Length: 248
Length: 318
Image (cartoon, rainbow over all chains, first blue to last red):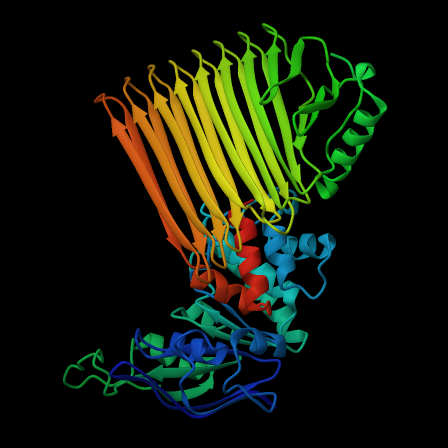
């Protein structure tokens, strides 16, 4: 069953049509991947679903669990159960990790903070009272952001490049957590340039030039990585050599 | 000086003054904790510990407080000072003279409470002498009422001896600031360290002026001047951070961050001046609205814009 439905979604930023008629169904309790070259519109699509500043004037329809998202501000979308993890998480000078996690948590107890920190592989005794600022590495902040999302218990998580800045061991832990979220009925949409990440998805969409040009199970769509690209009219599409065949 | 010399009325006033601290209630008064309470220009409570001398007396235009930490004495528990006024109107003028003798240590927690202020002036003129090897910390927290009817004028001159350490924090986060004209200046001898932090929330028609100045005069002297401010409504603030370095290996940094909302106006003027090629000072100042990425992150966790903004400011001023 589709929890998130997009129908002919178009978004123009300046002179450029960055989403050009995107239609897609994201199924409840599934892990989806959005792949495609830089500038394909993947992050734009996530920002539009979340309703970020500058991404609200879209055409078409986006519905979450049957509710139109048009006109809903970010916090109201979040209260429906939608949230987002940024490729580069924000830094909050002075704000302690526990306060950050509690802010959006369903259960705002210290025990919950400790639980989710442990789940992302960060020692609560070491991290709970640290600030979410430049003293943490990008990877640490990414894990803390994921902890805050776990505490929120969302229904839909938009994750922009979950592997960015994450070491291999932590990445495996993150995949396990995404699996747990899926098992709990949450839907995950991962934006990625990584074949490893793609293989943890149940289903994938290939985007290019603001459109979805292919979709299917991850193994099918992974042909994009094997051949670097699909032939299309994108300005950055590779020029094929004579006799070269690209297939997916 | 002893509390036994105080009148029953003074003791009652001291209790009321401390009671007004509310959630600031960390004003401990055990036998091993030195403390001093001043209501208006009247000393209404005090207690000393060995190694610490405090003489306080009412003078024509205020109250003089002489405080001395004896040589090589370490005052284990923070010294608690409470300055304030419970009526709506009045003037409090503290003339403070502090000496931390060589190799001594003292940490002072000062609470300034004006919970009912409509038209109150709180003026502090302080001279602090920190002798070689001594450490003196002074944390001043203000609790104001909702009307903002307080004029706060703290002027402090600090002479920091060789290898000495001075750390001060000025915090006004509860209630409305009123008018603040804050001016701290420190001279740093060789190998000494000074750290000054001001954290202020301005609301309504508050007007805040901050002058933090450090002169790195001796070799290897160090100083950090930090100002963090959040302004909303029609509040105005001007921050002047000045750091001069005139000795080799002197190091310093000036940092001013201000969040501005509504019709508030903020101005930051960092001045760094270097008179020696082996000295090094830096500065950064950032004034603006709440960072949009921080805000959108918290909104995406379901916080309202107001709650998200408060949380970001809480972090900045923590």
